[in-house]
Length: 466
Ligand SMILES: Cc1cc2nc3c(=O)[nH]c(=O)nc-3n(C[C@H](O)[C@H](O)[C@H](O)COP(=O)(O)OP(=O)(O)OC[C@H]3O[C@@H](n4cnc5c(N)ncnc54)[C@H](O)[C@@H]3O)c2cc1C
Image (cartoon, helix red, strand yellow):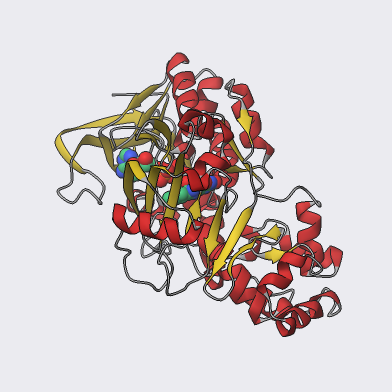
């Protein structure tokens, strides 16, 4: 077969890249091994309602996601309700306003509810130690511990940044999870000042948004534009090799029908007879493991032996329940949980409170919730509906009268912590790929995790290959 462009991987990175190509009048083919596209963004029905079962929002610091939704005719909305923190010592307390656990002000009474007077006093050293102190520290944990002390690192940043990114903050690069943090430190003179400037004194709560109806509507919108523009989306098809082709069509992608893996937690396996697709443009938009396996065959990229950092296995339990005790949203839009002996979950989202359209769809006394597991250093989480219900009751303090639907999703290690060493290697990889006409690489492992990084990179990658 031949095609204007081949995109390997139909996650949000591959779909945004395909969308850019279609907008330029090309007809790409998207090869996706699973039965549906969207990757880590997936919608599904639980009990009486359909909503996101995977990623559910984008960080609204990036205007690109909002612009894309507008272009696709999708109305977007921010979340309602504030966030909470749960610890064995303090129970549920409001989450201080800030970024990934770094407060925007140490005078915020919510900070004093979490830190001891001594911990607060230590954190105040950040305000006077000057902008250079610790400024060279790239790791989030290292930087926070140096400037704000152990209590801020352990009681705020570990549960919040760790919960959101499924990694210990020592494995997170400060600037990749809070873009502009170290530049803000240099400019404002303190980490607290940097976060205050980044958050702009904005309203409390999460600086995120989603299309009304769920983030998976963005996937649906992209798919319909790609198809309308003459692109093709081939699901249940797996790319197994990428090779140099002829001068005319410099790339050849080997693909096979994707067959069910006996272990459903693992990707599908190639089956049947193969097809080679020849193309002048190829975009690798898979996860890191599969991407490197495909790129290893191209010596100029020098990827042999490179391993993408391993994320921790993540498990979600989504519940739709009758629980009148949740009507007043006792924990706002949800909570992050400090490691403790009462519950094993690391976070709970009260989804029908967070997204008002979902609350409307659930109806009176019915609530949608999601609990998440997966802390670094802990054994593989064991999650059942009964465990989810018990922990939801402890965390919210509300009784669950009836379960209308539940779904446990195993995500595997799909959120790799992007270390400084990994990001430096990725920059080299993009440079090397730029010397090979018609090849580009995108996807979270090659652009930064989260939609605010993945979507702009995917769109730009498509534009560059036009
Ligand atoms: C549980 C969870 C919740 C998250 N929540 C959020 C959130 O709320 N907000 C946010 O911004 N980010 C969130 N993230 C991160 C975000 O989802 C990812 O950064 C983003 O979706 C990655 O998109 P991608 O296209 O790079 O990768 P993926 O979504 O992993 O897509 C890659 C695709 O390539 C396919 N593929 C792989 N190899 C092959 C092959 N050889 N042949 C054919 N197809 C192949 C895969 O099947 C997959 O569909 C979350 C992540 C997880 C795991």
